[in-house]
Image 1 (tube, rainbow, N blue to C red):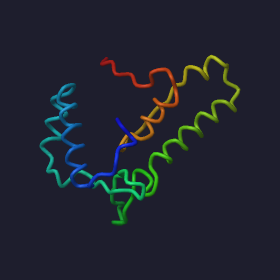
Image 2 (cartoon, rainbow, N blue to C red):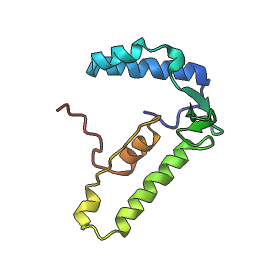
Image 3 (cartoon, rainbow, N blue to C red):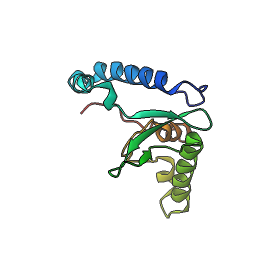
Image 4 (cartoon, helix red, strand yellow):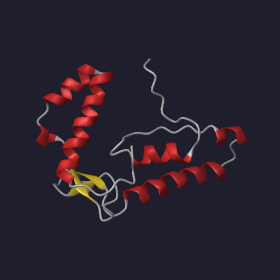
Length: 133
């Protein structure tokens, strides 16, 4: 994923991103991809341009107010700050040095993946287990 991409029109980006991801999902899990493909496109959460020209996901809270998966201003900076804070917590901990060189993160929710991309950029070891078990 290229995070430093130039700004794009949200509606075009949303459809393009959705179709690209759906095609990738069909390659690894056709049953799940077919279930998602059967959903009306209108049910896919809306993407909105951020102030720095990237994208965020707009969701709705139970009360109808908007919730955003990422910063509405600078989502890449937000991801970097999050990852750096986690890295600093590890440095400040009493973990053995070899544990600091072999980080393990549990990611619960991907959003647009800014934080996952930043984790992979920040740490040299592979962080994504792509194996199928």
